[in-house]
Amino acid sequence: MISENLKAKLKTLPSAPGVYFHKNQKGEVIYVGKAAVLKNRVRQYFQNTEKDPKTEALVAEIFDTDWIVVETEMDALFLESEMIKRYMPQWNILLRDDKTVSYVRIDMNNPVPYVSTTRNPLDDGATYIGPFYAKNTIIKALRILRKIFPFYEKPYDGKKTLNSDLGLTPGIEIGKTTPKDYKKSLRFLIRYLNGDREKLIVDLEKQMKAAASLGNFEEAARLRDEYFGLKGLKRKIVFSDKEFLDLSSDQALLELKQLLNLKDPPRRIEGYDISHISGSNTVASMVVFQNGASDRTAYRKFKIKSSKNDDTASMYEVIFRRLKHSEWSFPDLIILDGAVPQLSAVIHLLEQAHIPVIGRNKSGDHTRNADVNVIIPVRQSDGSYIYQSQLYSNDSHLAKLIARIDEESHRFAITYHRQLRSKQLLGR
Image 1 (tube, helix red, strand yellow):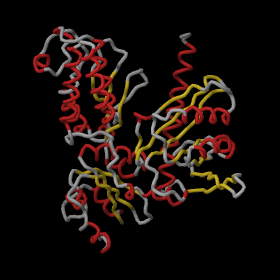
Image 2 (image 1 turned 90 degrees about the vertical axis):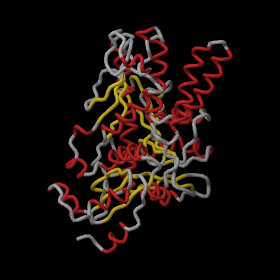
Image 3 (image 1 turned 135 degrees about the vertical axis):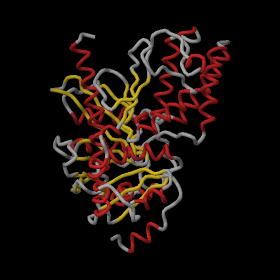
Image 4 (image 1 turned 180 degrees about the vertical axis):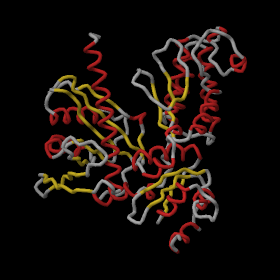
C-alpha cells in the first residue's frame, strides 16, 4: 500500500520527459529511471496490473518518489546514465541485465575508423563514449547523427554499397573524401556525443567561413552541411547540455549550497586529483560537473612540471595553471583530493579568484563505500584560515555527489599517468 502523501505527489507528475528516483523509507535512492512522459511511466509502478516478481519487490520498497524534468527524452537518457553512476541504486542492478549497458566505440587509430556499439569497453586505445543504459535509444541517435556526420559502421573494405549512394558513408570508396577529412568529421561526432553541442556549432561556423575565405569551397560546403544539419536538429536530440535543468531538484547541490553558505547551488564544480608513483610521471586531473552531471568535454589533464614527489606543491601548480585559462568557465566550487596541506597551498589563489574550495580527506580510499570527510576552510577576521572537518555517511546525497566527482578525478588522473608510463616504457 502506498501512503496518502505519495498518492497526492503522484497526482502532480508532469506530462514531460525526465528522470525519476524511487526511494525507500530511509530516503535512499533504490532505483533511477527515465521516461518520455513522467506521469505515465511513474504511475505504472503503482497500478494494479500484473508485474514480474522483481518489479513487485521493488514497488514494495518504494516509500517516496522524486523527479527531474528535462526538455527531451534524449536528455533523460544521459541524465539517467549519470545518476545511476552517482547513486548505484541496488534495484537498477537487480532489474537491469548488463546487456542493456552500451558504449559507442570509435578507434581513431584505425586508418579508416568505423562507429559501433559494445557492451564491453576494452583498454585498446579506442575512444569509448558512455555508458548508456538504453541501447535502442543510442542506436536511434546515431542513425540521426549519421545523416550529418556520415560514418562506416563496419570495418572499411573499399567496396561501394547502397549507403555510399545514400550519403551515409563518407564516400572514401567513391573518391568523395579522404581518410584524413573523414577523421575530422568523426572528431566532430565525438564532440557532439560527449556533449559539446553549442561550442561545436560555433566552431563549425567559424571553420566554414575560414575555408570559404581561403577558396577551399569543397571543404566549406562539407562544413556548411554539417553546420546546418546540427542547427536543424534543434530539439530532436540533445546530448548532455543540461543548462536548462532545475537545480533545485538536485538535493546534493542544495546541500552544498547550504553547507558552504553559497548564494546559489553550484552550477559548475571542478574536481582535482594528483597521480604518480614515487614521483615519476606526476600528473593532475581536472574533471567538471555541470549541474551535478559529468561534462567530459570540459575535462583537462596536466603534466606536472615542478615538484615531482610533493602532492601539495603539485596541487598548487595545477590550480595556478588552471586559473590562467580564463577561456574556460570559472567554477562555482572546487573539490580537491586532499586535506589541510592541499587546501592551505591553494586557498589564497582561489580567494583572489573568488572561488570557494573544499577538500575530501579519504586517506587513499576511493571506493564507493568510504564515508566522505569534507574539509572546509573558514576565514578568520585576521585573514587566516582554520579548517573544519565534517563527516558524511556514504549514503547521503552530498556524499554520493562528492564521491562521484572524486571517483572521476581519480580515474582520469590514473588513466593519464598510465598513458605516460606506457610511452616511457616503450621509449616513445
